[in-house]
Image 1 (cartoon, rainbow, N blue to C red):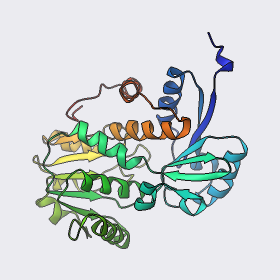
Image 2 (tube, rainbow, N blue to C red):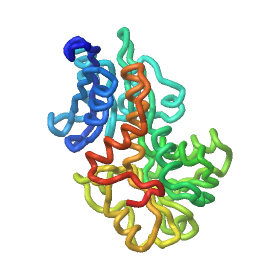
Image 3 (cartoon, rainbow, N blue to C red):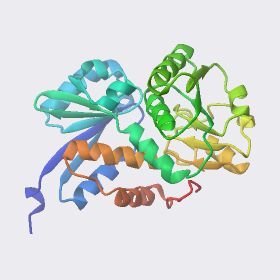
Length: 296
């Protein structure tokens, strides 16, 4: 039997703000252990360090010098990190957002596993839902990935609402160039679009443990809507709680968290992750069993 200290070692981590509650380290480390790796996953919390996105150049250099195989990138750095990279994967280039950076041979290569992560979670968690018209709140780095996934998964028309109206319009324009005229539009307020929508996706940080609340008035919800979150801490946000209370089908952010981690694990280690096993690990640490139809 190979001694533990003789097994391959991989050092990786996550850069973002307010990430102390992240379950990503456990997901990566447990999957690494299952595959015989000494995988160490470090949290680099900008809030805890008293830093902002302007510290990214320094943090990337430090990670390279310490021998990191790669880094996950989360709010508020998914777009700010791009100018600091040598190369982007086609997905990251198209989305204009990076959530995974591979550090190899003196080069920094940006990838995006959020898009595929949301798509897989959506397919499994909300099978068969209507998607002629969908409203998305939030047009940032994660929002860009989710929007692409929604249109690729058959959404007919996506309405994007963001407090930064120019950002929403810019994302809508990029999506129309990729998927066809009229497939995405920007709106200043969600009420009119929600009245005719099949579903709603929250891609803002509103609802996280550190930023409680809802991204829109819950009075706008109705039972016919399905409602999805990308937040997974807490697993049940105030928005999902309100949606479930009136009978909406819902999808929490757990699936996206797991499936984006599956992709990042492959980039960091060169090994395929066992998605089923990672889903079970996530359910254990989240304290809830995964549901086939997205209900918990």
